[in-house]
Length: 259
Image: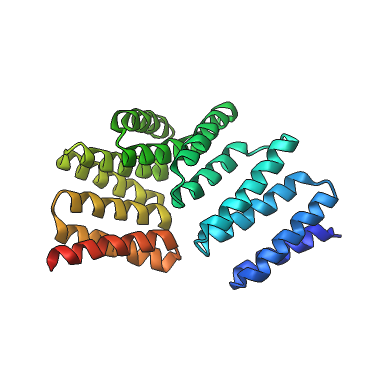
């Protein structure tokens, strides 16, 4: 017979599937409380992680997502549970969305150390990519490039098309910032080829967005609009809120140039 915490968690997942997000959040909290009472701390942490994923992915509510991931991280730290690297990354990702870049970088460094310790190359790869994107935004191009080259070597060795696509698109942006438009476009073209092999909407959408940004920076605004339109359409179909908004913002830049 399913325990009460499991029932609450399954109810939360069903509410989430139905788009009843307030009811889902309430059930996730109830499940976490029940798991804590039962001293099932691993599932308590997982309930907070699922809640954070809902706030991030379905609602683009990065503040509440951050709070949920922080609760999961705290439980994992207290009880020495697994997946610390995942939670450090999740926390950093929300902090990046919220503009808390110094805090994000601190947690990405923690995610990097934890992922290396656990041998989790996927979290390590995502961590290096996000950290590099922040460093590029702040103008630290040499450090960003070192991280991206390390990441590319690692994920290429493992044949992970999704991560190869992500790192190549970030290399494209870096090369644009170094005023190497042809090399940047080549990197994005490689990224798109790997994204299509991986066939993950979020990965493909982000690569299309980055390709559009790179083309815009190279002055090819017509081509940029083509890729940004595709990114926006994919984001809309897959309910990728932040990707949709970012593509919309860059399309506005294209229209401003046309005007």
